[in-house]
Image (cartoon, rainbow, N blue to C red; front, side, top):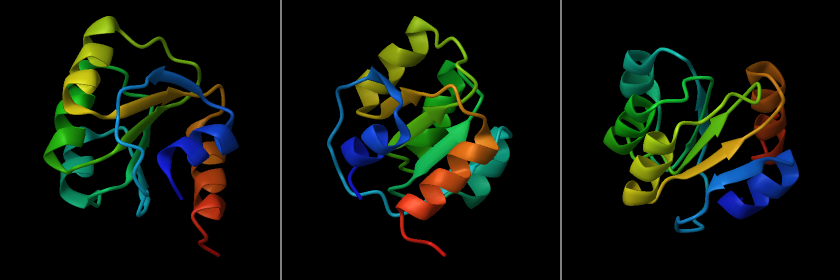
Length: 111
């Protein structure tokens, strides 16, 4: 499923729109950035509440294509700029991480 399709299906707010609309190959949910570095897979999405520039740096290290910020958290401009520089999409949703993870799990065809 392409990033744009995920955004539409999750009814998310696209905050950073300069990215390559590639296929997502999975997702990882965590707020501990060292955990993300150790366990997230390339070409996936990160579901988190960590809305700051360091989240983008970690996403870049593991080649994450999409960051989904939950609970309608405010997203600082320096995070948006960093994601734009790296070509990482940022989406904000009002849903919590549990619901977002479950929806994305189903959308990506896991059962």
